[in-house]
Every structure is written in C-alpha cells, then in structure tokens.
Length: 289
Image (cartoon, rainbow, N blue to C red; front, side, top):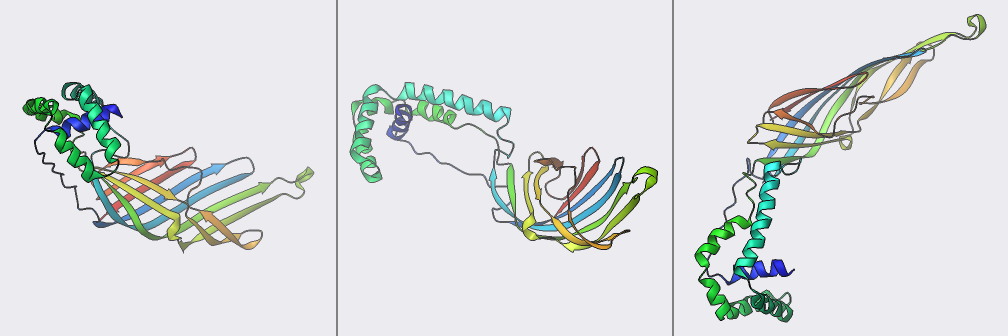
C-alpha cells in the first residue's frame, strides 16, 4: 500500500500533463463476420467380436462478433512481455525511491485518511501539498521524472490480438456409420450370429451444442480457434437382425479435439488442419468472411 501510495503521490505532485493515445484494433470492436466450419470425423475399430466404421460430417456456420484488440493473446504473455512486466516493476520501485520521501508518504496517508473516497477532497489536498517545500523540491526533478515515468508502463507491443465470439451458430450433421457385432455361439456354433447395423442420414444440429471462439493475430497473420461441440443427432438405423432401429449419434467418437486449434496461417480467411487419434482422425476447415 505504501509503495503504491508513494508512487501515486509522486506522479500527482509533478506539474506536468501526460497524453495517452490508444492504438486502434485490427477491426473496430463489434465488427461481425461469419465463419463456416466443416468437420469430418472418420474412425475404424476392430476387435474379436465387433468392428465399427465411422463417417460423420458437420457443416455449420457461426455469426462472430469482434471484441477489443489486445496486446496479450489467449496463450498469455510471451517471454518478451514477461520480461517487460518484470522490468516495469523494478522501474516502479526505483521511481518510488527517487521521487517520494517518508514525509510525503505520511502526508499522503493523512490525506487519504481525511478524504476517504472523496475524489474532490483528495484533489484539493494534493494541490495544497504541492506547495510544500518537499513538493517544490520534487518539482525540480520534473524533467527526469517525465523520462522515468515512461518506464513505469511495460511495453507489451502492439494491439495485435482480437477475440471473436459466436453470437449464434447453425448447421447440420451427416452420418454414415456401420457397426458389426458377432457372436460365435456355444458348442458347435449354436446361437452364433452376426448383426450389421448401418446408420445413415442428415439432421440439423442444436444451436446451443456448438460453441466457437476465434483469436486473430494481425502481426503473426494467424488465427487460433477454440471449438466446443456436444453435437448429437437422432437417426434411423437399419439392423440386419432387428430391422429399423433408432440411433442417437454424437459427432465426436474416440478422437478428441485439443483445447486450442492452431495457430493456423491467415487472419480468418480459409484454413484447414487435421487432428489424429488412435482410431482415426478429424479433419477441420474454417472459412471466415
């Protein structure tokens, strides 16, 4: 508390004006774009008594809204940014030692004890204190203080990252799965059977089952995606033994999506990648407009 108080007081007591300019983001906050998604899930498994062949495709589109531009991305500060933050903390300690003394800290504490949250009171008392010998002595350090203040804010680089969140999503899921179950039966093959079930069809998805966040990097010229899908559909299956059977099918099988997809080359635009698993793969393509 004393460190922050002293630094704040030192800044307030110097008679100079600072001008802060905020760089504009890659696109204005609130800008809208549509991202089209195609996800193809293919897997094959085989055991002693069963096998599966999975072929599922999601075709969807999400209306995205741009957030504010940031200089730190979803992956957190880079090593260079962490070093800049650490250096600014060192600079703040040095600034406090050079431009605030014990008397001023005591006077500042007295102001905050007297005024509390009353900003007008604090401002009036600080103006009075600016006329004290301690403050006048500090005013003589004005030129150097201006230079030193530049080191109090870490240089995190340009506002290069921008997060896009899905306002709404829609789409359809196509399924073409085959499941085979075999039983050799008892002695002599008594009761043996093989049942082959195919599930084919197309179904609209529940809009709430699909979530998408995209982060663009205008300096690195990349886009990173976070895709959440609990997409399911109910289809009509056909069993070789039972005939028509209802089947609830999830889009994803054993291959899982990573927490972050990318970074992929390009700011929105057209991108593709493949996620591999033990039994198959997920092919993903994104098209931003």
